[in-house]
Amino acid sequence: MLKQISIFVENKAGRLCAVMETLAAAKIDVRAMTIADTSEFGIVRLIVNDAEKAAGALRENNFTAKITEVIAFTIPDHFGALYDVIKLLGENGVNIEYSYSLMGKNQSEADIVVKVGDAEKAGKILSGAGVKLISPNDAV
Amino acid sequence: MDYYMKEIETAPRHELEALQSFRLAQKIREVYEKVAPYRAKMDEAGIKPDDIKTVADLGKLPFTTKQDLRDNYPYGMFAVPMSEVVRIHASSGTTGKQTVVGYTAKDVDIWAECAARALVSIGGSKHDYVHVSYGYGLFTGGLGMHYGAEKLGAVTIPASAGNSLRQLEMFRDFGSSIICMTPSYAMSLIELMQENGVSKDDFDLKAGVFGAEPWTEEMRREIEKGLGLKAYDIYGLSEIMGPSVSCECTAQKGMHVCEDHFIPEVVDPDTFEPLPAGTPGELVFTCITKEALPLIRYRTRDVAALCYDKCECGRTLVRMLKPQGRTDDMLIIKGVNVFPSQIEAALLGFDNNATNYLIVVDRVNNFDTLEVQIEMRPDMFGDNVGEVEGYRAKAKTAIDSAIGVGVNVKLIEPKTLARSMGKAVRVTDNRKLKNKFEGGKQ
Image (cartoon, rainbow over all chains, first blue to last red; front, side, top):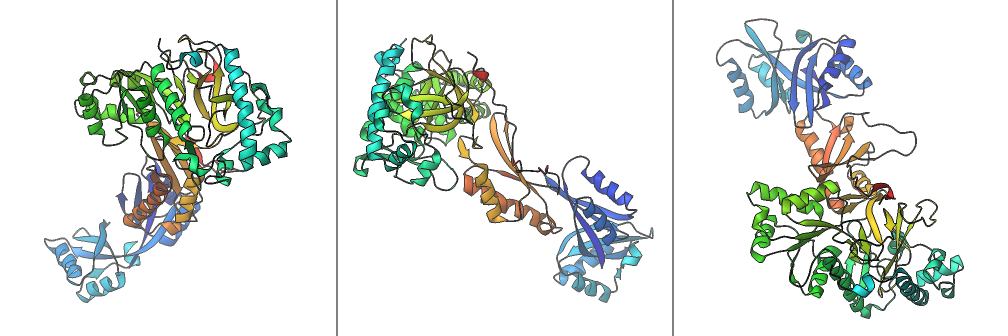
């Protein structure tokens, strides 16, 4: 399982910039980013090298930041590879709330992050089926 | 120039003042005898009914405030037994209990007469079709103008507010010539006309009285152009009577007060000393003919100035220049009275940690907007758009139902609202409601 940071930002120019400025100053390495947006606010979700340190730096700078557990896995870069994994989760009743991709280590593979209700259960299903899970150390 | 009651409306000032003095002295004797809270107030101030002989003695009397009405809710300030009361109205949303007012049959009749005067002063007659689009109900707007139009003998169309496309259809089919509504409702009808390809030439409108909320000269021009009529300002408050306490004449230079029924004063809102004519201050009214609820020196909290110069319409009745604001923090949003304390109570009732908030009022395309900005806290935030939107929706429902006006709830980042050293500033009103009478110039 990976630790993801979620940050509340108003949907206006310069706010994402302020998040990144804070992380840069704290020497945090950002590995993946996705933004869920509504007309008035957004939730920035990040995978970083040190989630606790990043969240601390953000809170000191008056951001609302929350750490959530997500699950990440590596799949080979060929047709149907993503389908196989998603199908596995679906068949086992695991709902995916959202998903995005992570910067991969290997060009012949893809790294995928998913947020599910029960990360532990999903992890067991995936590792039981031989899917390569990414640990915090792999991600950084 | 037509008048509904020429002798009164054009009476020499000294005759009018003699009438006011006579009625005032009589009314003070009556309230001292019949209204316990007034007797107590006057006794406390050491004033006897005999001390009040003329209008010049008015300043000796204690003021009445909205709090007095709340303290004596619902009928404690009434001067007649309930068997004499034929009508109840209540003020739109305030903190806690609403303000209840009552009328005897004679009060209703005088009110109708004042409204008929207002309609004549804007060029109306019994040949007109008076279309009343104020809300009917506890709000005084609808029934107040309705009775005035009937008193005048005009064809009265009790349309009430809402169902806007039907309103336009009635304008056309019923031959509406004078309309009565809030200025913001007039603006929304104009927008609807544009959306539906309806032209002002489809109607026969000639004049409209617009009140119950502040509006600008710019809105006046837009309403006149959009509906093809002359737009007039009308003023009233339920505590004193309702619409037609004062109304503009065709000169459009201030609203003539029905001074034979209500004596206006303007006082300094801090020292309560009377201010000279032309100087803006808090508007105070004394009812000298009301039977059911004759309020004495009632502080309206509206800021306005009085002008005693004879008007070009020939009326000698004093004109009050368009209210320029309030001495309290009451906001008038889309015609509804809203106190910031109501919003705070609703918000904290829903989430007692939501102490960092700001109320932002604006006017966009002539429509009032109300936004409540709430600072995000970690305990409100859970990495999930649905949760955050859910919080927003619940906060909106809580506030909407408390104040009766639609609010936009906006969640903002922590520590973005200015922190003040003393009492927090909770309201930002960006509306620019300036008008040509500002500063008491005339």
